Length: 355
Image 1 (cartoon, rainbow, N blue to C red):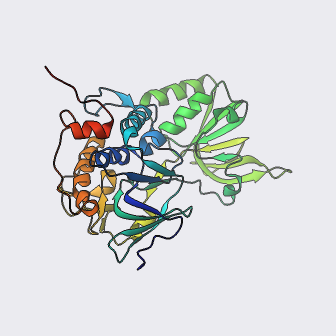
Image 2: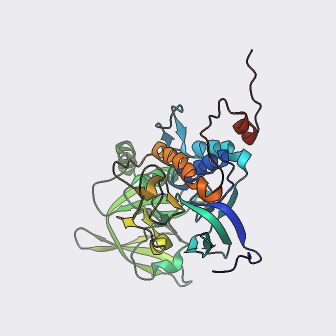
Image 3: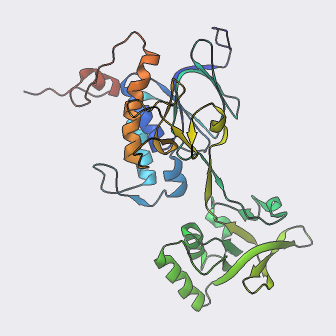
C-alpha cells in the first residue's frame, strides 16, 4: 500500500501483539515501560492462552518469586500489572493478513475485519492456535454443539444425562470422575488399556467401575445411529475383538487433546523450522522480517527452552529491539523500576523518598 493517508476505521499502532497468553501480556508491560502502547490480538475469546485454556486450576511452580500459582492466577496478576499501560484487546479474532507497506510499516488484518497499520509486530502465539482433535466418525460433526462437545463450558448441561466420554488423558478422566453421581450414567471409551492421565485418576476410575458407578469400554467409535427425531442416540463401538457394540447416549464428550496449528502465520514470509519461527539472534528476538519479533513458545533458536520465564526474558529484550522502529530519533536508556522517577510516572506510582 502506497498511501500515507490512513483509511477510515484503520487503527494506527506502534505495536501489535499476536497472542494474549502470559508472554504476550508481559510483552505489553515491557513495551509500556518504554512508553509504547500495544494492541493485543488473540483467536480465543479470553486472555490467558494455554494457561487458561488448558490448565486454569492447575498449579505452576516455576514463576520466579511465586512459589505456586494457577494459570488463571498468573493471568489475573499479569493483567493487573499491565493496567497502567491500558492495552487494547481484540479477542475472538485471528490475524489473517500481515503485509509490509512501502513506508516500512505493516498492514495487519483480522478475521473479523479489524485493520491496523503498525510499526512493529510481536508474535507471542504460543505453539499456534489450538483446535480440538476431532472424532473421525462419518456424519458425527452434524451434532457438534448440541450433543457432541469437545469442551465443557456449562457442566449443568450434562447432569442427569447418559454420557459417553472419549479419551484417555487428564481431561477425559477428570470429567468422567466429575460427572459420576451427577449424570444418569457415565461410559468412558478409550482405544487401549493404557492411559495418559494421572495414575491416581485412573485408579479412582477403575474403582468406580468395580462398584458399577461408571463403565469403561476399550474400543473405538466407528459409527453412530440417530432416533426418529434425528437426534444422536447410539455410538457404534468396535472393540479389540472386532465386535461392534451399540452404546446408548444423550451426550458425547470427546477429549483427544488440542492440535496446535500455525495457521496464517505460515504465509507471512517468516523463516519457519518445525512449526516454530526462527529468530535472527537472542539480542532482539527479531525474525528474518525486520520489525517482526517472535517471543515465547512460538520461536526457536539454539538453546531454546520452552518455559514461561524464558518468554518473559525474550519479551524484555524484544521491546528494546523494537524501540528504534518506533522512536528512531530517541536514545533508549536502560532504567530500573526500583529507582527511576520516569518509570514511576509511567507506572502511576510515587517515587519513594529516602532520608
